[in-house]
Each structure stands twice: as C-alpha cells, then as structure tokens.
Image (tube, rainbow, N blue to C red; front, side, top):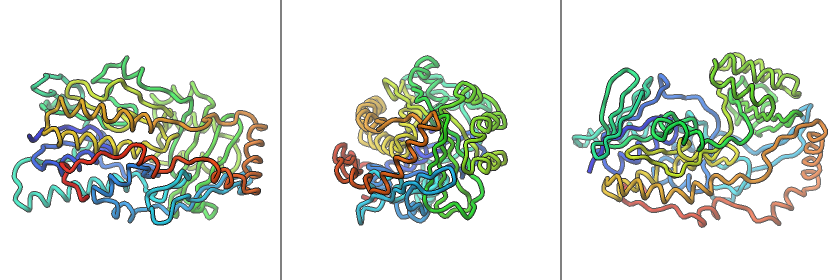
Length: 431
C-alpha cells in the first residue's frame, strides 16, 4: 500500500531512503525537507565500509560515486617542521575497489556534497522516468529552507505535522534523518530520553576548508600538538584543503559556544589552537573567512528504540557511531536500506515494518559503534615527543607493517561475513 512519508534532513540518510522507497513503490508520496536554503554542497570527506559498498552497488550508483572519487593515496604523521615521521598507505586487496582492509584511506573516498548530489539527482531522474513512462500517482519532492515546528501523533491516522511556516499536513510516517543533534529525536522522544541517548566521547572537532598550497599533497597529514590537540589535513588533489581540528582542551568553553554565532565559535577555536605549531596560523587565518565552518562534540547516539509511534530515526539521528569509527556513512546507508526493505516486505504494514527495522538494526549498530584503541590526545609536550618518535621508529624499522601481518584485522570482507546484508528483492534494485 502506498504511503505518504515525510523525511526530515537531506544529508546522506534522507535522500538514500527516498531513493530506495521510490524504487520499491513509485506510488509512495515522499517529501524530503531540509532546513538549509539549498542542497548543501559543502562537507568533508566520506567513504564506504563493509556493507556500504554493496548497498550503493545495488542502488546502481557506484560508478557515479567513483566519478567523484578523491585522489587520496594514504596518510602520514608529521612533525613540528612538517617532516614526515610515518606513512600509511591504502591496504585494500587488489580488485576490491570500495573494500579496504583497515587502512586510514579507503579505496573509494568522496566529498559529502558530491555524494549527496549523486543520490538526489538519481532519485529525481528516477521520478522523471516514471512520469515519462506513464506512472500516475505518487511523487517525490525536495523542499529546502523548511523545518518542522511540531508533531501530533494520531495512531492509525498517522502524524499531523506543523511546519515552521504554520502549514499543517498529515503523514503516514515521519522519518528523522537530521543528524546527531536531531530535533526530530527530541520532539518525538522528549528532551530527557534524547539527552540520555547522546553519549559524549570527550572530544570536540571543527571542520572547514582553506585554499590549497604547494605543500598540500594527496597524502592525508596528521599532526599532534601538546595540550590534547591534533590536526588532520586532507586534500586529495582538490583546490580546497580540508582541515579537521580535534581538541580535548578548553572543553567547557567550546561546548558553550555551540549555542552561539559561528563567529563566536571560531573565536573559541582560535583561542584553543593558537601556538599549536606547524601551519596552525595558516589554518586559523583561513578559518576566519571559511564559509563551510562546522564544529560539534564527538558523540554516539544510543537509543533503546529507533521509533515511537509513526516517527522513526535513520542514520546519525538514531545511532550516530561518531567519526572515530569511520562508519557513519555506512550506518546511514544500512539504515535506509533496511527501513525501505522492511516497509516493502511488510507491504507497508507500519507496525510490523518498524518493529523489524528496530530489531534488525541492533547488531549493525552495535558493531559500528565499537571504538578501537585509545581516543585520548597527548596532553604534554613529552607525550607528543614519545608519539612522534615512536611512530617514526615503527615506520623506519617497518615494525608497523610487521604488526599488521601478525595481528588479525577486521577487514570489510570479514565484517560482511560477520553481519551479512539482508536481501530485499522487494526493493527492485539493480542486483
């Protein structure tokens, strides 16, 4: 039975779900709203891990994603003068593009804006083909500069939604795909449950881009500084270089800044990183004029259930694993795939579909939220010295490569075997 569905958020999870729902049933009425005034073409580097690649392949979008691939050849840890201390290359197996074996850089890296545009354009093209083939009924639309003011759940009658412009509309299903700080989660589950679900990891991160210089290469560059700070630089052959500032310093002031203006947030990050060394002054100067600056707490979202009534969460809104795991994009695709698959399999029986989605997602969410290793940044100059020299020694003596051979690795192939992707022929996908 066709459904009238509202998806809140046009990041990765929302458009992916819209694409899959439309493929499963062209008669669904799907509305995707985004609070930004247009599709956000900005954002930093993303990749697919384990189940993410076969899902994108099933959607028929893998080649389109590859066309936007970032040319990142690996990573290196650098010292205070920019000298290379240790290098780590792509550890993918030959012939398994998009599947990698635990290296920093995936075989298929893509900018967030490019990824979202590929999915949105494909879903719009699908809609056009359906209409040209004579399909009547159903629809897919993207509405920008729009947000939700409130919900009223009416059980079998669905959800009455009040939009920020005062307009009201009823939907069979509302999907929150609006990120780790989801307003949908807060409105549907309440402030207390939403707050308890938000598990801080003790770190803050800021993202922005600066103009590329000759020193920026296709290697990602990692720099550790005293006072629990680190910088990650990624360029991949692009005109703009991505800057990631990680901090476990000045925590209370940084957290308090999130409710303030972007200019005030930048001022706090400048205060925190001034004097950190290497090219920090270049990055802080570029940050002042960057129009894509974004900062937030590193956190995970852990809810006892992913839905309440006829409101369900997908992606970071329901189970953010954090950038520390590198599995946020893959988790978003898994969630969209499973939710669309269960709605199709259960013939749009919402009670059965949402219950199955909630149960099936428990294992992949638990697996994605495992954080390996110590997430603490070095607090003293001595600790930084030990890290830099330890990595230099390991790389020079090839100890790191020896350990990689001796230690069992959680490759994407192993992860796929550990949690096989469910098959949903009801989704009418390419494979």
